[in-house]
Amino acid sequence: MVSSRAARGFTLVELMVVVALIAIFATVAVPSFTKFVENNRTQAAHNEVVGLLRYARTLAVTERTVVSVCTADNSLQVVRGTCDGSAALLRQLELPAAVSISADEDEVSFRPNGTAASANFATCYKGDHQNGFAASIEASGSIRSYARGQSKGGAMTTCDLS
Image (cartoon, rainbow, N blue to C red):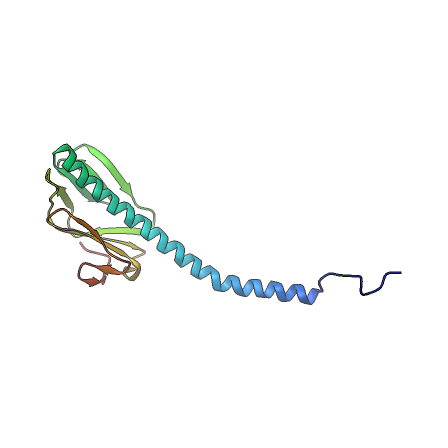
């Protein structure tokens, strides 16, 4: 004869409590995870922009020629020479959907000595400037990247620099 003490398992009530707790944790975690993914996409795109700018400067110095970074429809292009359309395309950066890049100059040309005209870039996800990233190019050619939501003049106020 089997005693009632020997039977082990979960009751339906216990199972429903566990399912309810999992549902509560999921509703709390999913929005945070979504924001984490958006922030990660923005930072990854910004890192690619800064990397492309550094590539252009390095190429200008090593090849002793003018290398330009051209802004196009939500993309950046690195060309030898100027952005007049006749220059050879060296690299192109296409940004993912909902990530936007804005620059206050349509063309940034790095000279053979590494110098360039000053320019600013902003990378944002769906226009959210508080979680966007900024980069600036100084006249000396140095490229500076700023923390999330910060820019050269302090806190970012917009994602549209044009």
